[in-house]
Length: 566
Image (cartoon, rainbow, N blue to C red; front, side):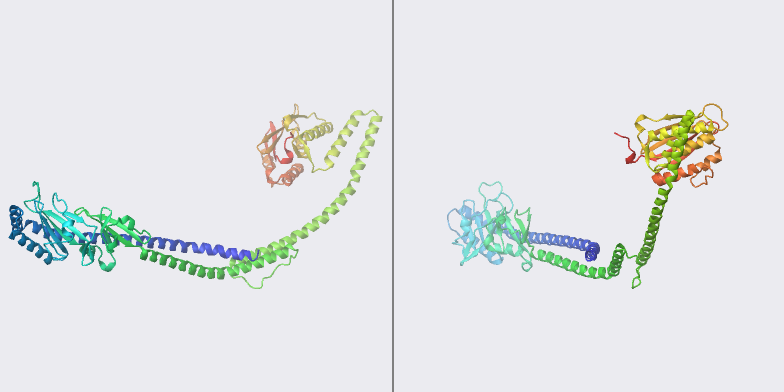
């Protein structure tokens, strides 16, 4: 027990001291995680916004070039002449090819231009092969259908340029005068190298990575092998976070790829720092708790040792070697020393009381001779009265003998109300004979309460006082009425007479437990016996109206041993 208590105390103090540290650390950790999440979201939003602006600027550049081409008067005139010439090769075709080649050479990223004429023929320039006569890819790629404005299309299949795969984006537009309302439309299309778009989406030296999607299909990516695949199949949610934004102008979706490795690493570092803080705090708090609690624990060990000595019967007052610096310890030590002195005194008193009790028991045995002598003398007188035919005297002697036996034998015993009332009837009969009175005893007691138990002779002093004082100089019948009832967990006994009553000053004195009762010794003794038997639960009080009545109320706890039978 001595070893376990300090350990439990240290653990308890350590736990209590660490609670604020843990709460603060957990709050800081949650705050840091929230800040990191917000920072990541800001980076994602910034990346998407930058990528979207770059893409719009890039497409705006090429749509401007395409618009200039589609509205150029010279080119429109050439297209008109070519359409009019039919299948005849003329100078206008050569001039148009030259102009298309000039545009390809002048602007980076344009790998080819093709114009689809109204009769289905095409005029193109292949920038990858620097040819306007033959191309392995430009005519196969074709031109998307254009209804109005600019049309954007990504090509998921690469074209081969000197054994190198090149991915193409197309922007197509109707030539002015050959658009809406015409059955056959002349359409121009720019073929743009996907690297131009990839460079816009994945800038900042690799810190920003994105896919360009058409639907769910990847059309532009840093890793060219990803192009043409469903981006959902390429997602790696363990290492990246994917956020998409659709551009309403061109219809493409930008998917930002945000690596979360650095974020997770930062979180792990935060947890590591939190662990270090907690361990360091535990170490510091443990040392502080130990230093603070050591004197207290030493004092507790001393107190336990002193209690063990007392338990083994050693009542010598302990003197501790060192003075405690804590007022609480000093108070405990003083109280402990006072307690030992008090216990030792109580034990001595107990021994003395035991010796006195043994002497009293011997004295009682000796005193029993006198009652036996008195009983024998009463029997002798009784027989003499019978021989002389003095039967009234014989009856009085018999009742007196019964009263003496009842009152002398085991005065502290319990008895039933029925027995106590029987004894009271005998006592009143004998008192009437002595005082030449005719006092009547009336009982108002339910039959089921007759077996309740009380201590013997509790009611006799009140009856005796009533017979001696209540009926002096009073005419009419002298009546004593005793009632019994239950008041919660108490027996309520009332003793009422129709005598001359009690004056107010005496009534106050009778109801004052601390007052000197003078000649009313019997009532004082009853009060002492009640306190001895029942403690503060027992109550006696008097009420009276002069020339009318006196009523005594006696409340006794209804204990287990006094319960109604049955």
